[in-house]
Image (cartoon, rainbow, N blue to C red):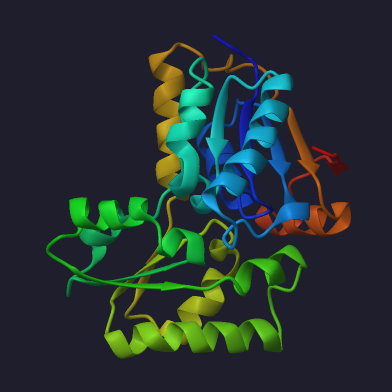
Length: 266
């Protein structure tokens, strides 16, 4: 048994969608979350820049005694997950990648779309995932760096977001996909708006549940699950705006009393 928290890091607030899946699957586990919203978006940065930024978040989580770390960000994972694991060999680091395997199982016409940031879309890592698991499918990849900044500002709805979504999703509609993979952890916040534009014939999938299952499996393997009769503790930190972060957290889990975000400089 190990009652230390699960550490979760992201370039911003998108990782809260992963945090939600983890706490729902592992209700007895404590968590510590760090959002580097001051430096978001990561999708426009180089792999070296992303590594240096994410390394600071990992160091922060280790200082908070995290027993396992989740990089709840596709851009971090496709850019430097191997380097992070090499740098921190004594702690398990779980990455976040587009749910290509799930999409292959779900798609009936074998025409799959992946919507991600530019960094993830152009990454070798994503191309390898497609080659490995979706070689018998037609996969359409489109990247946008316009969505994350709006979500980070708390502007999930409105004219700007609607226009961006209509423009980027129009390409997938022309391509005739029946499954859309959300390759950014920010995107589940606007899943309903995407579904309305794409229509009921397109299934939308993300990697949140798979990440939570992976975390549980690793904690079981290394006998590091928390005691089941204890109350979990949640802590949240951001390098950005605390109020926007708190409002986004409230959207993530409505009706659950949670602590405020604390400001931190990494």
